[in-house]
Length: 221
Image 1 (cartoon, rainbow, N blue to C red):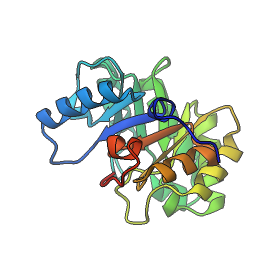
Image 2 (image 1 turned 180 degrees about the vertical axis):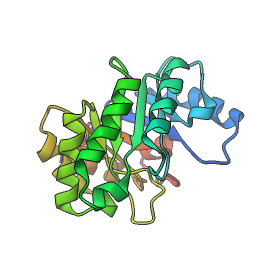
Image 3 (image 1 turned 30 degrees about the horizontal axis):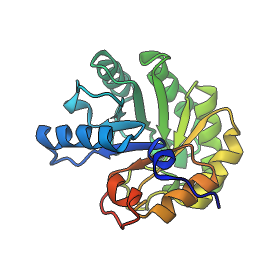
């Protein structure tokens, strides 16, 4: 497994704060920490936008259940982009995926893509732990057809669990080098973070970035 130095690993991280009880002062602290650590971006709730920072700004859409109406997801994404978001991580409707309704999944993603056109980066959170391998492959294919830039394992809030090396490998084998793969949810050690990268992740969603970069065990997202 490839070992990364601290700066290389930090450059793959979306430093994340999505707790519902987070306050503006918590977000401000996150921004300053991300800048000090050299993470790729911060990921904050859409209600916290706009923010001022020297790193990229990501937010979420349809979070965390994915059961919002497609029009609501599209409107939320458009509002976040208008408030300065560089990247949008949308939660797909996992129920549609489990029911095999992949055309509807694709249509929903395409609607958000149209509301948040490039150069905004669109990541699709698939909740891989709640899907079969066949469903993971199908939603990744739908995301690619709909114009997404990344597929992402998890919200970190689903009871089925977060990222796994198996899911990341399967997602990477499905999208090849055409899309990015983001591993998120339950990654709390540097060893786990590097294992996700070795499995094919090109971005990491972490809330305990400093602890992980320091070789300690993190908590939370």
